[in-house]
Length: 331
Image 1 (cartoon, rainbow, N blue to C red):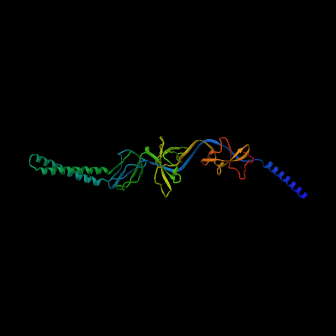
Image 2: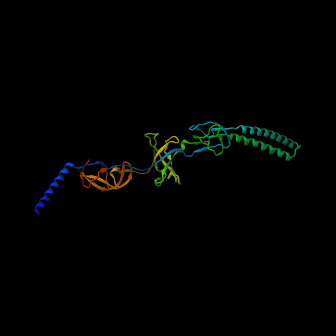
Image 3: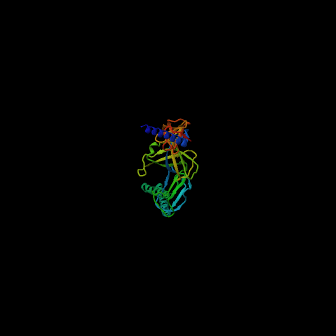
């Protein structure tokens, strides 16, 4: 019995010595440390979009006829009333010449019968018929002239030609879009937002946009409209974004869109890798100290801390496996 007790005491002494030796060799755990900072935190909704016209205008013919000339190209600036294309007018010119000849004959007859009526050599009925025939002939001429003018398709707004889908020789018919016009001063962005994010988007929110075509530049705008119906195939909604004053970008340019859902200017921030399941590891007097926190806005690099920490506190980034409360650590 005494021998077993002696062996147990010896084993305990050896174990204590080994533990002291391991502690002296291993020392504090090396960790990466970051301080709790103050700064802006923003929650963003990401989307993609493109620039289009707020009020695009479709151009189509009013008369069915072949196209003789197309007078503009895509990207050209146009003004109200400017000719865009001319349709074949040979038939209309012939009809107009015929109508003008008939109108001249009817007018001469009207003048002659009116003069005879004034002299008492014609009846009132004959005069009335001659006057009516003359008026009808002249009205027919005016109608054909208006129809002839319709064979020249003109711009309805001042802007630029966004799209041109017509070439000389094409048959233009009413309702078929030949061109599309837009006013650069009324440009907007149409963005596609995932249906999971759309409940957080409201009109008036600030939008920050960028494009590979504009390296280093941030384009600012604001949400102006959210379409009431979504696309069930894409599971997304369209959001319209207006530009802030001073922005002037080409139609069709694609943009990466970040809608600022909320923003806090003086938030407490820690690296994202320092927070896990609502817990962080603080460094207090050289030892690890587990702390529960309440997180707010989370980004790819930083997380907002609503409670549990103070500015200047030191936290462990990516705590190592096996770290326990009270372990000695060093940066």
